[in-house]
Length: 57
Image 1 (cartoon, helix red, strand yellow):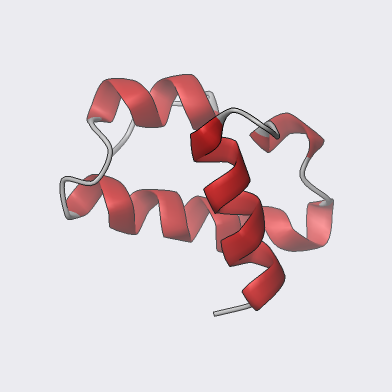
Image 2: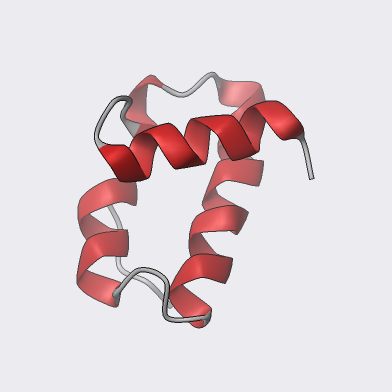
């Protein structure tokens, strides 16, 4: 996984950055990290939706 995407995802979870301001080339990796965290219970489905802007599926 791209280290920069990991850094962005950590910042998004902390409220420092937003997914919507993530560079296009990192969005896929950041979304995959978010999905993994939701699947593993690190973030709830509601948090995923708030952070990423779409329902967790």
